[in-house]
Length: 470
Image (cartoon, rainbow, N blue to C red):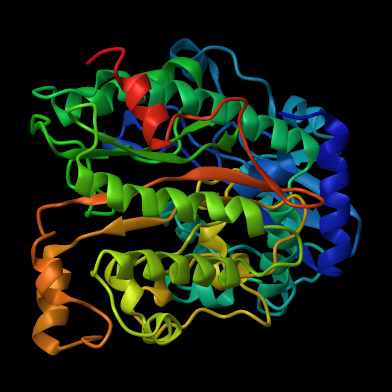
């Protein structure tokens, strides 16, 4: 939690941006794991609620009555039976005082708080602002409160509130940047541990478990489910019981959450400790694309333009290996590069690892002059295209993947046959995939990596680091 003045200032700014009506921000409740008393732990608060109200306790709702200049924190105080199991928890009134809220009440008062000024709920629905809900208990609460069916709540959410929250959360304050730096430092420990453990016959699950353990030991836990796999061509490859095999590549995509902010890094390592010549050739392309972002990402530049500049660089280098052919610009326009890079260059990051994704990627990652092309494979997966601004935090994560099913499908259709050498692609079906990812802060004149130390990724540096245990 930051100081009280931070939350007072944020709510005041939110009121100005939204202008009128009543803002209702729902906190999260405990979520059962596999039976009611066995909950996911620790409870993760809704990020927008945290941003404006700062409290982590479950079962809270924040109300900002713009028209009457009132702010409420609503929730039920815990009883003695809860204290026996969970220990002391401050009262709702104490929690409200810590973040500068004057009015409190039990959860049963929520309806009266938001209805008392307007009288009937039907007219209130035009003036209430809420964000798209993503948990079923919150959807039920909204249905009971506003008589909006869960299937209609996403479209009923306040676009004015969405845009205001995105506008505020997108630009990180110095204290937020410091928190992400700290999370990235834990990310360094997570990934370097994985790099030192990688060797033939160790299981994916063992290394993935060690990475997760560091996140739980040094931070609040992981910021998303850890990806650790020899099948780097699978975007979300979970650790399996498979043993690492000499000569293959292992991809680790992992991050932590610390002080409510996230890290997100990816490294790809040779299981044997040294890259083969073919692996070096592909890896060096991804490495160059990754580092190119540091040269061109700065305020005023559209991240979509950075993405396609990377795609053109990748295409040029793949042509040198005879994996691609033809005119580079035409190949990229046709989407041929998506055979190798089927996702975007990066995404916003902050309190959520895919920051504010639940508010709608079209509002988070794009603006009036940038819209994703939803009709083209690869381009439809862009998460970030808007003009960069000082204080934005984005990921830089190019990759090259050889996906056998995709190769087979495109070859059968003759898709992009003027730009892809399918005979050569056949020989790479057993390759896997490579991704290199770091978290980047947009500064006044350019950008910088977040975190105090770089997780090794340059080829010679990485092989030397891994040599300690090989």
